[in-house]
Image (cartoon, rainbow, N blue to C red; front, side, top):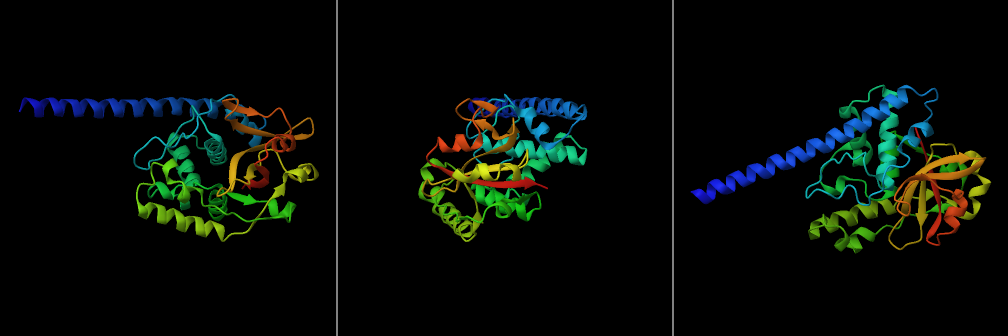
Length: 276
């Protein structure tokens, strides 16, 4: 009886501790959201890029969404990887357009952007591949892929990395999970996209606007896109506003976007999308 009582007390303590930590995290994120909303309301120029720039110097943290055993919506404005930076910035911009900066509305926007058709239904309902993220957010009416308007160079996604390397994804636990991600990969690979080869970016810089989403394509086998950020022009040249794993924070790249890509052999070019 004593052992059962001790176990019950221990479990209650764990529950309260976990709940308290979760509330503290939400409280910190809500404070950041309130800070951003005040800054936006005081902006004379509420252009998209000015809202995105609020995130500059936010610390970088890889795999910010891989923290739960079961898929749950993660809100983290304190630390960002490249994709969660883009998602958080887009959700904040959407809050501004809706004139509603409540945590509830921000959370709704994050969920709608991050998950297939805005519905959380396990790990594989999250849009893991960037091509899938692009295609589904076009379907939801959040973005437009402007790349075909600029370049006629074909880009064929050939994704297979997740199904071929389940050891890197702790949530891919069963053969059924692996079969499901294979089916998702097959659906993605049926789509033909366009991209701008990195050697040609300078020709089209004037067609790319500040705040356009820049997806960086790769030649790594099984992957489609390895990095994402926002377009920003400085001194008449196109740069990248992004969460940098090298600099460990959100920055504007010192190099032009073209030079940034030319220095990385695995990078082949870009897909450009515009928020609606």
